[in-house]
Length: 93
Length: 227
Image (cartoon, rainbow over all chains, first blue to last red; front, side, top):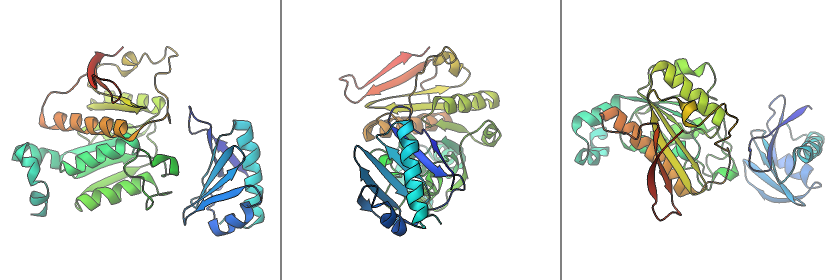
């Protein structure tokens, strides 16, 4: 699945990653498929927070993924990994 | 009947005629984040019943420190939908026309409004809203908050670009900077107060003058000239 990153915040290292077809995320499946990428800090019916080294990622059921503490290049690389993991786990709906 | 009872305490301050004007007026709020949420809350509790709102975004975790409408129940929901739920929980008769991002063609949607509150956090969008208001001769209430500071000013003819020296390559506003809740609440509430004053014919802080505040500053409030 194709994805794109946007830079929502000019003064913080936060990036939004979304699929081009605006797919929603099944967070139950996401929890399983993302556990290899980092530690799942919290999960509610609408958000899953993943901690990974010096950065964190919030996955929203609406399909939005917010990456914090990363550069644009790192966001693109991490976005790719997250998308691959979510796709492999069938988490996109 | 319910309306009269709910907003009866306004009548110790507003006349029945002024309350009626607030009720009948249509307010546009562009941006429903830190300042916009509080502006909507104030206007709804002032008894306003007609709104046009713009926001394309959804609530996320980093909004919780300052955005009134950001709750566990509204997390990941569209800000416009959360605004409708909140406003109607105050007054079920409130009518809100919701729109996504304020764009170049959004100006046409302002024609039926009586005041526009610009609660967006992007300078480019503020320029767009200000220009749309100037074209339609709509009173434009500017507000912003950053850190512990904030400002509000009403534009009704004075060029927004001149006030902020736009076009000179000077970036005067930064989006998504740290903002604490009292600053967002103050800026949003002051914007609502200016909109109220426009509707009932009281004086406003008119550009090029602006009202500034800093909750860490001993003065707390002061006026200064923009541009």
